[in-house]
Amino acid sequence: MTDLTKHTPPTPAVGPAAGPAVRPAGPPLLEVEHLRKTYGERVVLDDVSLTVRRHEVICLIGSSGSGKSTLLRCLDLLEQVDDGVIRLDGYEITDPRVHPREVRRRIGMVFQAYNLFPHLSVLDNCTLAPRRVHGLSRAAAQEQARELLATFGLADHVDKHPDRLSGGQQQRVALVRALCGRPDLLLLDEITAALDPELVGEVLTIVRELAERGTTMILATHEMAFARDVATSVCFLSEGRILEQGPPAEIFSDPREERTRQFLRRVLPG
Ligand SMILES: Nc1ncnc2c1ncn2[C@@H]1O[C@H](COP(=O)(O)OP(=O)(O)OP(=O)(O)O)[C@@H](O)[C@H]1O
Image (cartoon, rainbow, N blue to C red):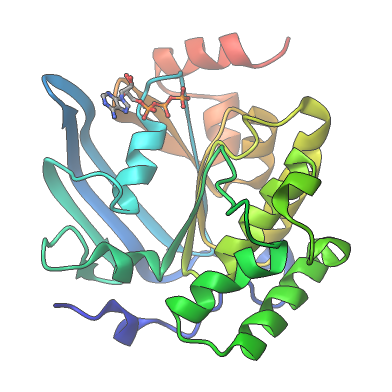
């Protein structure tokens, strides 16, 4: 079995704050080639290809049902693909001999529903995987978690259980929990969709900060203003295909495809 951990590069998920000047660099971190995913007769992803370099922030936009979540779930091996190849640092993770657990050591995912363990404190939620999966000592895992929780304004909540926190705070904890695994790539699936509108900002602020620190991310989002500000590249999905990809300035101001234009007219105010 391929041991992906042997190839873990030194780039931490949260590096020193370096501002947006952290530029996409190096060889591709993730390569997706001709991905196809069906549910029964239904083709949900069709010939999807995508390359992600370190420090890139890719925003997936598109109508409901266009395949954004399915694509993210395929990348984290939560779904089996029908065809195509996914490579992480050059290693084919769609190879059936690769264990999904090995991939998830390097790819963190945060969902719309926070999925925190309700019976564990915030601190224990954030230390469980580093201890069990990465073999960190309790003290080292706690030190790392406390530091990250403090960075994201959650220092006062470390001993609380999730049900004592607001939705926004729970989602921030979910983000910290994912970061505690020091992933090379973070997948965020509509992480503000379940939040009350007044709580969306506090979660997006964290994602913005992560982008500024150079965290490599792919996010599915309906927050167009956010995508325009934060993405290094925007992919417009339509009926399971990446119909158009480019820098946000191009996609939002001068899209090539009529379907992209129609979608943006529907979702952008004015
Ligand atoms: N487990 C499943 N079984 C069958 N069909 C599914 C399954 N999961 C998703 N689908 C279908 O796949 C298509 C793509 O769904 P997906 O959730 O990826 O879209 P999306 O772009 O993320 O939508 P949204 O913006 O609403 O989250 C939809 O038609 C959906 O009904």
